[in-house]
Image (cartoon, rainbow, N blue to C red; front, side, top):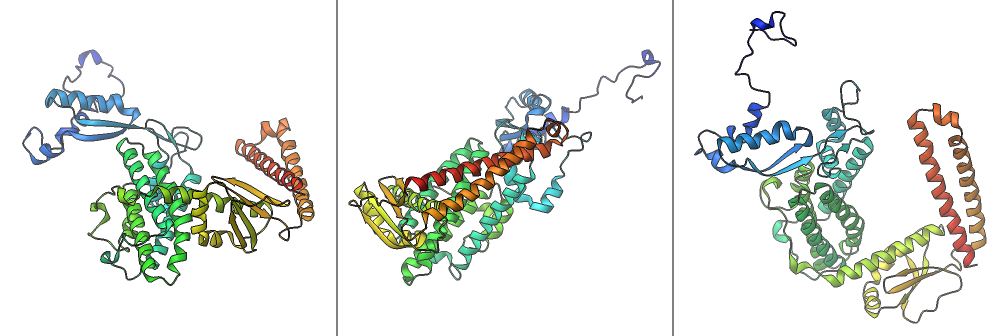
Length: 454
């Protein structure tokens, strides 16, 4: 027997072995040979063949996937799987295929050591689209790590504020605040959307839906709004809000578990639950009885109002700690009724020392304003800021950003610098240019808006 990269010198005297199979032959038998075949009555064969879904890269469709289909049809007369999910390859940050020659390979064990397995799984899942390559990025790994930290900290808040509660204490039937009704509605919407996306293998979009619900709706809005009840004196309302916090977190962990199995299991073991492990817990389902369109629409207006007030405060350099006069002109009676019934949230998040909600409001001469759905808001500037002084301050800031723009554009206009500097240095300067131009434009707009109300 002769084995080598080239034929032997007297190759005419040798005969190629006719029984040699290619490398992929045994792999092509994998769907059924691992299930007890040729015994088609074996328990594994009966239960697992054909399988539901094969997940694989596009680079081995011909070498592996097609051959599994051929062999399965030949030996069992059945297709080996119902679905084939084709995913892309993991490339480096520049879009190059990882290889030893380029030295751009990433050791996943080193990534896991630094960020954890769940962060890597989230990055790969959230950054994927069927058939498209994924560029590995440490910046995106940092974002995945930050998201898990956000979930962890939110979970600690829920656990601390539900201490001593058992599954039997969880009740979703009590009288609810508008924030309670809204978060349950948003939870239903998220469950429905994520389930549909999972069913269609749209893992990247499912991740984005989960991210938006968890970070924005649950952490940034509902948890903050729940504090009003949690730190209040109404024990019945407190138990309802505690229950909704625990229930919503429980459902979030179940939705996330296929992507983040480790951190979700750890958190789930510390909240009231039934069963031994999250991995065998029921997948979330929609509860239509918790849908509340009125609360959902009203909360969107309330959030829009709070964001607008915060933006105006930022524009006129006024911190939240400084009380303001807030005037809300109502154009839609239903919106007016909703805001009037929920002034406690406006007071908590906007800090007005004087709050007026009316359809009869006349716009003040010196005021910042914003248009909402069904309403307008006005923040009178009298006593809040000295407009002339604020314009002077902004003009100094504008001069600073104008100088920075000139400096960086001078660099980028130097052909020798662009030609000889490392690519990453040039890109960094271009990023600075965009940042400085954005800041220059924002300050210019603030000066313009202040001058219009002088």
